[in-house]
Length: 279
Image: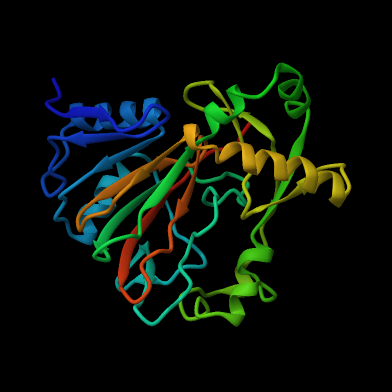
Protein backbone atom coordinates (compact mmCIF):
# COMPACT_ATOMS: atom_id res chain seq x y z
CA UNK A 1 0.00 0.00 0.00
CA UNK A 2 1.08 3.56 -0.65
CA UNK A 3 2.31 5.60 2.31
CA UNK A 4 1.61 9.05 0.90
CA UNK A 5 -0.75 11.64 2.41
CA UNK A 6 -3.11 13.74 0.29
CA UNK A 7 -4.61 16.93 1.75
CA UNK A 8 -6.94 19.24 -0.23
CA UNK A 9 -5.89 22.90 -0.03
CA UNK A 10 -9.18 24.50 -1.14
CA UNK A 11 -12.82 23.68 -1.63
CA UNK A 12 -12.55 23.98 -5.39
CA UNK A 13 -9.43 22.14 -6.56
CA UNK A 14 -5.88 21.37 -5.52
CA UNK A 15 -4.26 18.99 -3.04
CA UNK A 16 -0.85 18.79 -1.39
CA UNK A 17 0.91 15.42 -1.37
CA UNK A 18 3.28 14.43 1.42
CA UNK A 19 5.47 11.40 2.00
CA UNK A 20 7.14 11.32 -1.42
CA UNK A 21 10.85 11.82 -2.16
CA UNK A 22 11.32 12.07 -5.91
CA UNK A 23 15.11 11.74 -5.50
CA UNK A 24 14.35 8.04 -5.06
CA UNK A 25 12.60 5.75 -7.55
CA UNK A 26 8.84 6.23 -7.31
CA UNK A 27 7.05 3.12 -6.08
CA UNK A 28 4.26 1.85 -8.32
CA UNK A 29 1.68 2.28 -5.55
CA UNK A 30 2.77 5.87 -4.94
CA UNK A 31 2.71 6.67 -8.65
CA UNK A 32 -0.82 5.26 -8.94
CA UNK A 33 -2.04 7.27 -5.93
CA UNK A 34 -0.46 10.46 -7.29
CA UNK A 35 -2.17 9.98 -10.64
CA UNK A 36 -5.43 9.29 -8.83
CA UNK A 37 -5.06 12.47 -6.79
CA UNK A 38 -4.46 14.47 -9.96
CA UNK A 39 -7.65 13.03 -11.48
CA UNK A 40 -9.64 13.92 -8.38
CA UNK A 41 -8.17 17.34 -7.55
CA UNK A 42 -7.02 18.60 -11.01
CA UNK A 43 -3.80 20.08 -9.58
CA UNK A 44 -1.44 18.57 -7.02
CA UNK A 45 1.54 19.99 -5.12
CA UNK A 46 4.69 18.47 -3.64
CA UNK A 47 7.22 20.40 -1.56
CA UNK A 48 10.88 20.05 -0.68
CA UNK A 49 11.92 18.03 -3.74
CA UNK A 50 15.69 18.24 -4.20
CA UNK A 51 15.93 16.58 -7.60
CA UNK A 52 18.09 16.60 -10.70
CA UNK A 53 16.76 17.33 -14.20
CA UNK A 54 16.89 13.58 -14.88
CA UNK A 55 14.70 12.89 -11.84
CA UNK A 56 12.30 15.65 -12.88
CA UNK A 57 11.99 13.99 -16.30
CA UNK A 58 11.47 10.56 -14.74
CA UNK A 59 8.65 11.89 -12.54
CA UNK A 60 6.99 13.59 -15.52
CA UNK A 61 7.14 10.33 -17.49
CA UNK A 62 5.14 8.61 -14.76
CA UNK A 63 2.15 10.57 -16.15
CA UNK A 64 2.81 9.92 -19.84
CA UNK A 65 5.06 10.79 -22.80
CA UNK A 66 6.72 14.21 -22.83
CA UNK A 67 6.03 16.95 -25.39
CA UNK A 68 9.01 19.22 -26.16
CA UNK A 69 7.86 22.85 -26.04
CA UNK A 70 8.51 24.75 -29.28
CA UNK A 71 8.70 28.29 -27.94
CA UNK A 72 10.39 28.37 -24.52
CA UNK A 73 14.15 28.28 -24.02
CA UNK A 74 15.14 24.73 -22.97
CA UNK A 75 17.42 23.79 -20.10
CA UNK A 76 20.93 23.07 -21.39
CA UNK A 77 21.26 19.38 -22.22
CA UNK A 78 17.61 18.67 -21.45
CA UNK A 79 15.29 19.71 -24.30
CA UNK A 80 12.34 18.12 -22.46
CA UNK A 81 12.53 20.88 -19.81
CA UNK A 82 11.46 24.43 -20.64
CA UNK A 83 12.72 27.40 -18.65
CA UNK A 84 10.13 29.81 -17.24
CA UNK A 85 12.43 32.61 -16.17
CA UNK A 86 12.22 36.22 -15.04
CA UNK A 87 15.36 38.19 -14.15
CA UNK A 88 15.37 41.09 -11.64
CA UNK A 89 15.62 43.73 -14.38
CA UNK A 90 12.77 42.28 -16.44
CA UNK A 91 9.22 43.60 -16.06
CA UNK A 92 7.14 41.01 -17.96
CA UNK A 93 6.60 37.49 -16.75
CA UNK A 94 5.40 34.44 -18.66
CA UNK A 95 1.83 33.31 -18.07
CA UNK A 96 0.24 36.39 -16.47
CA UNK A 97 -3.16 35.69 -18.02
CA UNK A 98 -5.61 32.87 -17.34
CA UNK A 99 -4.79 30.08 -19.78
CA UNK A 100 -4.23 26.38 -20.31
CA UNK A 101 -1.05 25.06 -21.93
CA UNK A 102 -0.90 23.90 -25.55
CA UNK A 103 -4.62 24.19 -26.35
CA UNK A 104 -3.47 25.15 -29.86
CA UNK A 105 -2.31 21.58 -30.50
CA UNK A 106 -4.49 18.97 -32.22
CA UNK A 107 -3.82 16.74 -29.22
CA UNK A 108 -3.60 19.27 -26.38
CA UNK A 109 -1.27 18.68 -23.46
CA UNK A 110 -2.56 16.36 -20.78
CA UNK A 111 -0.60 18.02 -18.02
CA UNK A 112 2.30 20.17 -16.94
CA UNK A 113 4.93 19.46 -14.27
CA UNK A 114 6.42 22.71 -12.94
CA UNK A 115 9.41 22.70 -10.56
CA UNK A 116 10.56 25.78 -8.64
CA UNK A 117 14.33 26.24 -8.85
CA UNK A 118 14.57 29.86 -7.61
CA UNK A 119 11.75 31.95 -6.18
CA UNK A 120 11.44 35.55 -4.99
CA UNK A 121 11.37 36.42 -1.29
CA UNK A 122 7.66 37.09 -1.64
CA UNK A 123 5.12 36.97 -4.45
CA UNK A 124 5.31 34.91 -7.62
CA UNK A 125 2.38 32.66 -6.68
CA UNK A 126 0.43 30.66 -9.24
CA UNK A 127 -3.37 30.54 -9.26
CA UNK A 128 -5.48 27.70 -10.67
CA UNK A 129 -9.14 27.56 -11.66
CA UNK A 130 -11.42 24.54 -12.09
CA UNK A 131 -13.11 24.35 -15.47
CA UNK A 132 -15.24 21.49 -14.15
CA UNK A 133 -16.79 23.79 -11.55
CA UNK A 134 -17.03 26.64 -14.04
CA UNK A 135 -19.08 24.46 -16.39
CA UNK A 136 -21.23 22.99 -13.63
CA UNK A 137 -22.19 26.45 -12.31
CA UNK A 138 -23.72 27.52 -15.65
CA UNK A 139 -27.46 27.46 -16.31
CA UNK A 140 -28.89 24.41 -18.04
CA UNK A 141 -29.83 26.57 -21.02
CA UNK A 142 -26.33 27.92 -21.53
CA UNK A 143 -24.86 24.45 -21.05
CA UNK A 144 -27.05 23.13 -23.87
CA UNK A 145 -25.92 25.97 -26.16
CA UNK A 146 -22.23 25.59 -25.36
CA UNK A 147 -22.29 21.85 -25.95
CA UNK A 148 -23.17 22.48 -29.61
CA UNK A 149 -20.23 24.85 -30.16
CA UNK A 150 -16.62 24.49 -31.21
CA UNK A 151 -13.88 27.08 -30.73
CA UNK A 152 -10.73 27.96 -32.67
CA UNK A 153 -7.36 27.92 -30.89
CA UNK A 154 -4.05 29.19 -32.30
CA UNK A 155 -0.41 29.75 -31.39
CA UNK A 156 0.16 32.42 -34.06
CA UNK A 157 -1.01 35.53 -32.18
CA UNK A 158 0.90 34.55 -29.01
CA UNK A 159 4.21 33.17 -30.33
CA UNK A 160 4.30 34.11 -34.03
CA UNK A 161 6.26 36.82 -35.88
CA UNK A 162 3.58 39.47 -35.22
CA UNK A 163 3.02 38.58 -31.55
CA UNK A 164 3.10 41.56 -29.15
CA UNK A 165 5.88 40.06 -27.03
CA UNK A 166 8.46 41.07 -29.66
CA UNK A 167 8.28 44.62 -28.35
CA UNK A 168 8.93 43.64 -24.73
CA UNK A 169 11.59 42.02 -22.58
CA UNK A 170 9.94 38.63 -23.19
CA UNK A 171 11.67 38.51 -26.57
CA UNK A 172 14.90 37.18 -25.05
CA UNK A 173 13.07 34.30 -23.36
CA UNK A 174 10.93 33.00 -26.22
CA UNK A 175 12.05 31.61 -29.57
CA UNK A 176 11.09 29.88 -32.84
CA UNK A 177 8.48 32.36 -34.04
CA UNK A 178 8.43 30.53 -37.39
CA UNK A 179 7.12 27.41 -35.60
CA UNK A 180 3.93 29.19 -34.49
CA UNK A 181 1.71 27.68 -37.18
CA UNK A 182 -0.79 25.75 -35.06
CA UNK A 183 -4.52 26.29 -35.70
CA UNK A 184 -7.09 23.83 -34.38
CA UNK A 185 -10.75 23.57 -33.42
CA UNK A 186 -11.90 21.95 -30.15
CA UNK A 187 -15.31 21.57 -28.50
CA UNK A 188 -16.21 24.41 -26.14
CA UNK A 189 -17.33 21.78 -23.63
CA UNK A 190 -15.27 18.60 -23.41
CA UNK A 191 -15.61 15.32 -21.59
CA UNK A 192 -12.48 14.60 -19.61
CA UNK A 193 -10.75 11.67 -21.37
CA UNK A 194 -10.19 9.80 -18.09
CA UNK A 195 -13.14 10.69 -15.85
CA UNK A 196 -15.86 11.63 -18.34
CA UNK A 197 -16.62 14.76 -16.29
CA UNK A 198 -17.53 17.81 -18.40
CA UNK A 199 -15.39 20.96 -18.44
CA UNK A 200 -15.21 24.27 -20.27
CA UNK A 201 -12.39 24.24 -22.80
CA UNK A 202 -11.67 27.80 -23.90
CA UNK A 203 -8.99 30.15 -22.56
CA UNK A 204 -8.06 33.79 -22.89
CA UNK A 205 -4.55 33.20 -24.28
CA UNK A 206 -5.11 30.83 -27.18
CA UNK A 207 -8.83 30.75 -28.07
CA UNK A 208 -9.47 33.05 -31.02
CA UNK A 209 -13.21 32.64 -31.67
CA UNK A 210 -16.29 30.46 -31.90
CA UNK A 211 -16.54 28.46 -35.10
CA UNK A 212 -19.28 29.90 -37.33
CA UNK A 213 -19.74 33.08 -35.25
CA UNK A 214 -18.60 36.58 -36.19
CA UNK A 215 -15.91 38.34 -34.09
CA UNK A 216 -18.36 40.46 -32.09
CA UNK A 217 -20.51 37.47 -31.19
CA UNK A 218 -17.46 35.43 -30.24
CA UNK A 219 -16.02 38.22 -28.12
CA UNK A 220 -19.25 38.63 -26.18
CA UNK A 221 -19.65 34.95 -25.34
CA UNK A 222 -15.98 34.27 -24.68
CA UNK A 223 -15.66 37.40 -22.56
CA UNK A 224 -18.48 36.16 -20.36
CA UNK A 225 -16.91 32.70 -20.03
CA UNK A 226 -13.49 34.16 -19.16
CA UNK A 227 -14.95 36.29 -16.38
CA UNK A 228 -17.14 33.44 -15.16
CA UNK A 229 -14.30 30.89 -15.14
CA UNK A 230 -12.06 33.01 -12.91
CA UNK A 231 -14.61 33.46 -10.12
CA UNK A 232 -12.81 33.12 -6.75
CA UNK A 233 -14.86 30.11 -5.64
CA UNK A 234 -13.46 28.10 -8.57
CA UNK A 235 -9.82 28.84 -7.69
CA UNK A 236 -6.90 27.99 -5.44
CA UNK A 237 -3.54 29.74 -4.98
CA UNK A 238 -0.12 28.16 -4.45
CA UNK A 239 2.87 29.82 -2.78
CA UNK A 240 6.14 28.47 -4.13
CA UNK A 241 9.26 27.47 -2.25
CA UNK A 242 12.50 26.13 -3.79
CA UNK A 243 11.86 22.48 -4.62
CA UNK A 244 8.09 22.83 -4.85
CA UNK A 245 6.36 21.00 -7.71
CA UNK A 246 2.92 21.57 -9.18
CA UNK A 247 1.32 19.08 -11.55
CA UNK A 248 -1.89 20.21 -13.22
CA UNK A 249 -4.36 18.75 -15.66
CA UNK A 250 -4.63 21.08 -18.65
CA UNK A 251 -7.97 19.57 -19.68
CA UNK A 252 -9.72 20.69 -16.50
CA UNK A 253 -7.88 23.80 -15.28
CA UNK A 254 -6.68 27.27 -16.10
CA UNK A 255 -3.63 28.78 -14.42
CA UNK A 256 -2.28 32.29 -13.89
CA UNK A 257 1.25 33.34 -12.88
CA UNK A 258 1.05 36.39 -10.60
CA UNK A 259 3.61 39.07 -11.54
CA UNK A 260 4.12 40.81 -8.17
CA UNK A 261 7.85 40.36 -7.54
CA UNK A 262 9.55 43.15 -9.49
CA UNK A 263 13.31 43.32 -8.94
CA UNK A 264 13.70 39.67 -7.96
CA UNK A 265 14.55 36.49 -9.87
CA UNK A 266 12.21 33.57 -10.43
CA UNK A 267 13.32 30.42 -12.28
CA UNK A 268 10.99 27.50 -12.92
CA UNK A 269 11.48 24.31 -14.95
CA UNK A 270 8.41 23.02 -16.79
CA UNK A 271 7.77 19.70 -18.52
CA UNK A 272 4.67 19.16 -20.66
CA UNK A 273 2.87 15.82 -20.85
CA UNK A 274 1.34 14.61 -24.09
CA UNK A 275 -2.44 14.38 -24.39
CA UNK A 276 -5.12 13.02 -26.72
CA UNK A 277 -7.70 14.53 -29.05
CA UNK A 278 -10.62 16.00 -27.12
CA UNK A 279 -14.30 15.22 -27.51
